[in-house]
Image (cartoon, helix red, strand yellow):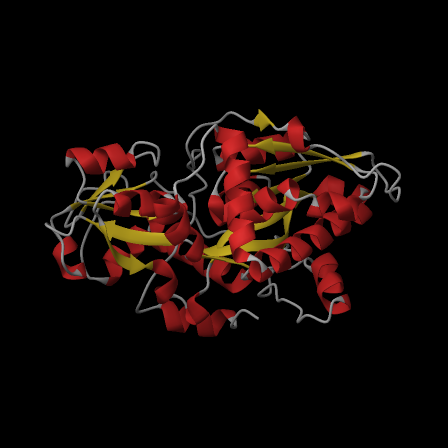
Length: 370
């Protein structure tokens, strides 16, 4: 269960800050195109009949979205849906997935905390609910060991983050602040040069010497390590119990109201998927890599896949208290006005499923529907 909000804030005040996308910002990823993945859209013919024939699920072709990758690849989610067909779509950016949810192009999505909070806030709390967790961790600071040997050596160096205001960017800005160093959030200039670099080109930037390191999610971090970089910090070590939200499960409020049975079936599928992943890590890793190959045309080599996979935890708990802390850190960084996140969570369906399975229920940190 997440620690209470007040306790979490005290414990993090001197150590870290993880992030959130500013409401004023609209970009948070690597592109904006959705890809229909109809090859996995098979249902159990003759299975139980639910309230709709199709459920449209969005996610990223990313290891931190392995609950979706594996759950769809292995048919675990489809099994729970009976005769209801899964129609998957993949995205490369949080805002485009939120747009798809708002437009009804997807019903349920796997997404990071920043775009989830941004989408909820911009709609004044009317677009989505977070209904479950999926993954924690998977973010590292990796550096050129010839130039940087300790954390103090970062001063005066050029460190990449994926994008201005994205989850890792704000985490790094706030970590810098806790060190007592000064950086202008918008320009990235200061005691450390924060260089906003698309994860797709970060390995090339590191290879060319235009950056000295990066605060990035997996598998980008492991790609840099494969090029000779050294892991200097795993962000999970900065959080209580080494856990912080990296991927949530969201649903449009309209779909939740009209098709609660389908939402519950998907959640049963994600809970079953996470259990299978944790019980069969090698098989799950191979399944995720197979799904990535189908979606991107190439799989990850073992030297990148193995360390990246180990750094991600697949859990049902959305770690609501850490999301609340992330919002505060974004406000502190000057990239977000104080948001009202009351009602962003509806964990009743998930807790019903967890209770029936004999598992502990999860908390919404006071941010659930009333």
